[in-house]
Length: 216
Picture 1 (cartoon, rainbow, N blue to C red):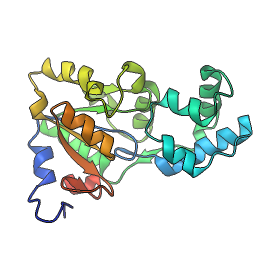
Picture 2: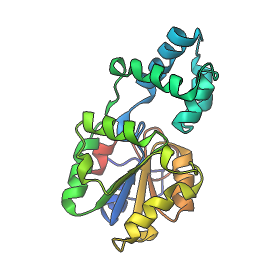
Picture 3: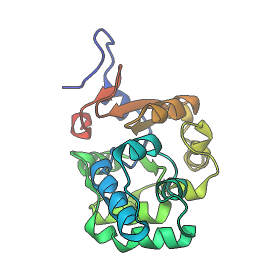
Picture 4: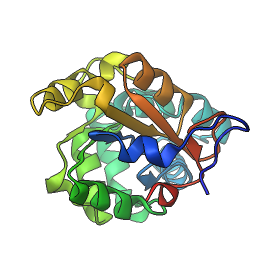
């Protein structure tokens, strides 16, 4: 059952399957991220920098582009390269995993002929690695655009400019495209770019579903 606001009369599944292109957010959309990565950041902060990183601080800054996020969380205690290396050294202990129904939905859309891409606040290389590790068909995706590839970040709709160029080369317009994400800033950015939007998780209002399995 699709979860929509009372009286909204909106079919989220129909919105997704009626699109020519579907672009996904990564964290807590395709991959389960917040719980495991908060623990990861807390472990790095404590082990390498002697910082007691609280959930309040994590909550305040969560969703920022990765480089900016770790700089704030680790209080600029080392160079960006060193902070990245410290984070990476514990990566194997805190791996993201596929969200319920995510792999199946992505594969079904690709088989249907839908253009599928990813736009995320994480960096591109780690995003591709996490998707591959979690069993997603990365090589079939139209694009994977991380925060390191653009100066614009959500909720700025310009974060989708490169995605639009890729899709336009295939004759796909913004009006033909839906973005799926888990946060209000995802919706602001998507609608500002002229995309449709479907939310995943405990969102508010119409066009939010409990998990991606509901969109199959």
